Image (cartoon, rainbow, N blue to C red; front, side):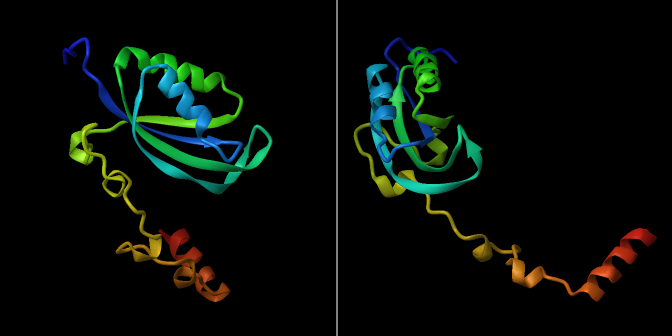
Length: 145
């Protein structure tokens, strides 16, 4: 795929930061020529495992446009920033509802996650809990196979 010299591509970056401010990530992107299309507000999250001795972090994301040649520099700068614990960059495709820089509806960019219990075929933990007797029978069935 050949890109024109001035063609911008849409990307989404999701990140974890130590402080309750996404200004560091925003500044790095903008200094490397990115145009922020939309941002998701920061949300305090508990980490499953400590990252750089942190058990809590603030998660957020941006949808932005940038020239592909400047993307690598932005990614390296984010990796060198001590306040950014983790970041993940994905391309934002038109089939997923990407928008141009002319119209940016925030609700369309970030899909709402449904809880696992509302997804068909997924049961809550209470639904799958077994008694000791039922667990022993299950183990015996597995061992017989």
